[in-house]
Length: 469
Image (cartoon, rainbow, N blue to C red; front, side):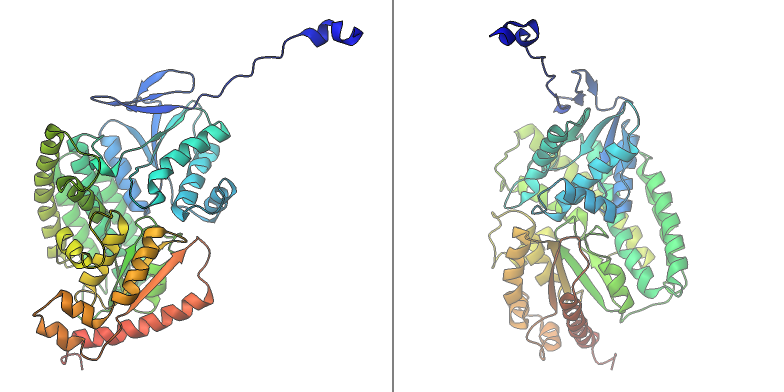
């Protein structure tokens, strides 16, 4: 009783300060960030940095350049490495998708190692819905910030369901330029690794031209960007080895989950492994996903229905996208380094429709449609890669394991006698599904890759025809 009456025991407990995470708010005309102290700043404020995680280093740098040219302070985080993978694993349950683990590690690495004093960080993290955990990435990041009590870090989250309508039309057009150019550079990089007489020297030239194009994407004039692209492609086409025709070069398609197929660590340098075996790789472009999200809105397939005015704006932007795409692809095609055909979303979905409803939105239908439309037509093999345990990836794998056969391919392209002749001696078509958790590929997968390459080489010989023999 005496102890209870002592003043020290009767004092009230001290009030503990409640952590308040920063937040991003999209207004009618602009986005803003509310800091942990409660101050509201425009997203374009010099104190705010838009942090873009790496998903292909050049693509991230080009997107950062577009942000910068719109008056934002933006930085592209360097490509993930083993240290970032470990950091991400340390702050997750390790049961999440690999992209989530890597982007979590990227955020923590930036805050601990690269953040400037007083800097407010807006972490760029698109989102979406459908049968994929991608829609929960932004939610997880916000929870991680709250759990670790990281002050003045907010998540900038745009939704794929409204075709990223939180940004203005001109920004989206210029982001489209960056997507098309970075997609082309990804495939040119593979060509250099396979065809260049001196791949190391070729990659040095490639790195220099990539830096030039990143810099020029800070310009708002399309003609300036187009001229710079033409000049860079001319210098890349002059790399010894690329300046000679290679009509019978075997090419495989790398499809699947958008992050893993573009990130070097996530795909465990698969492009370099295939290059050493003599295969060039065509990676499914990021622009494919952008066109697909526009398709979903245009066809009213998604739950989110845009108001009439917003829909008209989207259709107008699409018309400009078509104009710019034709101009960019014309320059790429004339260089001899770019894709011969434009992305045909309707064709991709038409090939997938017998196996999956278009109302089951997400990457599974794109993976299925891309594999069936490209095999034995433009590529001699298909590799589908995704995170370990990815549901859309496993759905696509289950369907393609049975569908990647000659009778299915010929049935999808009726009347193509040349294709029937090519596939006359084939039943199963070269297809390899890969799941990545960031660890090195096991020996069993390497053995499967050997068998895949043998099958792809055999199909390439059949596609080359009698003139090859």
